[in-house]
Length: 262
Image (spheres, rainbow, N blue to C red):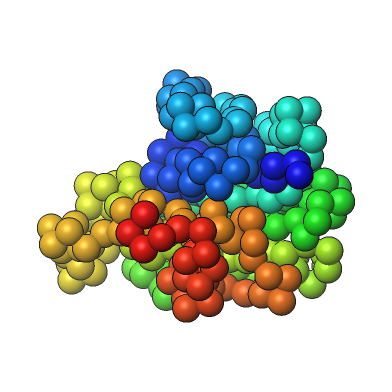
């Protein structure tokens, strides 16, 4: 049986790296994307060390030619595209609406919304041909909970939820999910602690500082298991949903592939 072929964006670190490594452990062939070629090359070596099949393409996911070449890389090397994990995203600008730079807002939407749109559009012919092709869009609690100072990020993640819902209706041959990964120990959280003080109400800023101080941030590998398993086995009946990484039905799927604490 041919190994499933999965594209993962934002794969050079954090949640994307974790999901890519876990997919390789589950037997998938992975095609990675991020802007840093050196970081992607490091992840490639990690995957190859455990016997995984991997390719990568460095580039800005908001550029149509990058998305087209990323899909072409997966098809050329692994015979098709069975799933896409849209994980690449940016938090900036951390600023209230009145003080936000319009170009920074536009850049946020280019990465957080146009990137997933362009990649899915490029991959759709292959996803339709795949047996239950899947699109896993990494969303956020910010999609449904407004936070002062996070205007662009909140709105872009809400857009990703609706993009997922519309995609599910328009493409009955694939499964599309928006996944809320929880509060994860990633570079984005570090950026929030470093730059968020002036943009957020003090009590909300302190909440994220305390998550880190108390060791309550999730290791990327924990929600990464959910992303990997959903990319391979999310049921068609779930298509269009905004779902939490630790929802009981998701964790039932995870338990079939990963032992507790694995």
